[in-house]
Amino acid sequence: MDYAKIYSAFIADRRLKEPHLSGYAEAHHVVPKAFGGSFSPDNMIKLTPEDHIRAHLLLAKIHGGSMWAPVLALSGECGRRVPSRRAIKVAAMARRHHGEAMSGKGNPFYGKKHSEETLLKLSDQTIYKLRHRGGSVAVGTQSDLQRITGLRQKGVNSLCLRKRRLIHGWFNADQFPCEDPKEFLEVIRESWRHKQKEIALFHLDGSEWRGFPVDAPVQVFTINQGRNCHVEGWFLDKSVRDNYKTLLVEKCKRNSALRGDISGENNPRADQTLYRWRNVETGEVIESKRVEMWKSGRCPKSGVTAIFSGTQKKAGQWEKL
Image 1 (cartoon, rainbow, N blue to C red):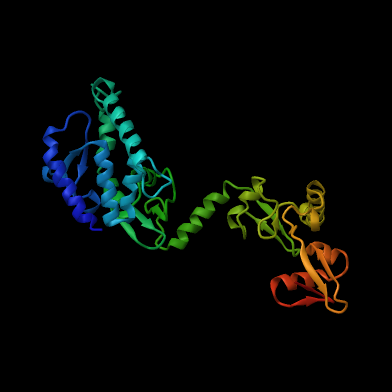
Image 2: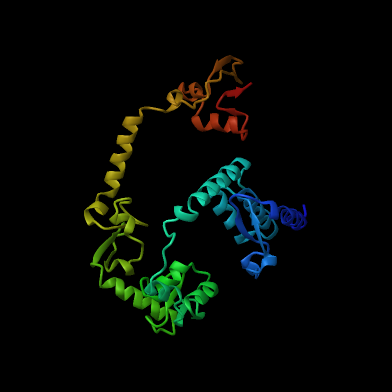
């Protein structure tokens, strides 16, 4: 299906209806900003909330990839690939009511102005330098860095103002003047060492390790949180390691006692069908369940399994008819 042609026809139709549009409407970029679309009147169109969602749905089907994000954001269907018709209607209704409620005096910022300090922050033209641990470098204002790195505005701001050290591999080159990314990682580890306490890890094979958690051979946070008693055989408590096998056996016995006997016929999933069996030597024919055949001693358990799997025709003196 030619979604590009459908999108062009859709926009052309809504251009004709735009002068007659009344009530709440939303601005839409005909050519998305991600593809170089501008704010010129030729590239802007007013759409109803329903049509706005449909327009982005068509763009997503044309370009795919990141163009699905606006569809999911507009429709509220964060767990589905394509929003349903009902989801589009509900989302459009919510957007319309919210837009009307936030317009004019309903907007908490109505009649107010930004302070000079806030305007200074918004118009920050300081040149920052970010470096990626892969080796690439980005230089520019916060808005430029947001476009170059692909990070969100909040993430770029956190790195530039040194609120965070590392986001998706990017770090502030002025805060950590390291040409080699490995040096930066070592600086990060060193900063963590000042916050952490030394620990000891004990392995099932008898080996021991001592140091800071950031240098540990495994991630130990799940052990600290009590979610696991060990990670890849490493324990925080030596006594727990020494008694691990005993505790594991006791746990299995305890679970078995709580579960009860589910072997053989007690298994709720056991085959309860009566099969006909014949003794190849005496010619005797009986009806028996597969569990009864090996429990009664007529056939070994492995033999019964082999008959039903088709690897052999008889087990002992018995064959299934």
